[in-house]
Image 1 (spheres, rainbow, N blue to C red):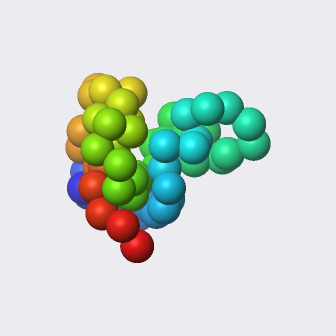
Image 2: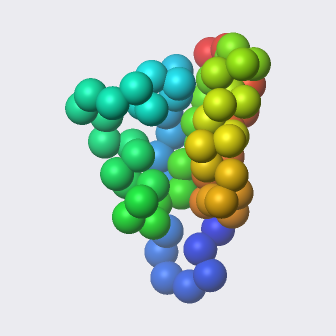
Length: 68
């Protein structure tokens, strides 16, 4: 994941499945604003949902299935 030009902004979210449920999570807003994201979600079914959610942003968003 890298920006084509200029500095890029990057966020890491552990337990990432929570952000798509709404609420006050700022990560989806940052992604929409062009930030790159590493979304950490150990549960395969929830990680799969995140991959589907961000299917059009594969250069910008990476989902990994690991426990921290």
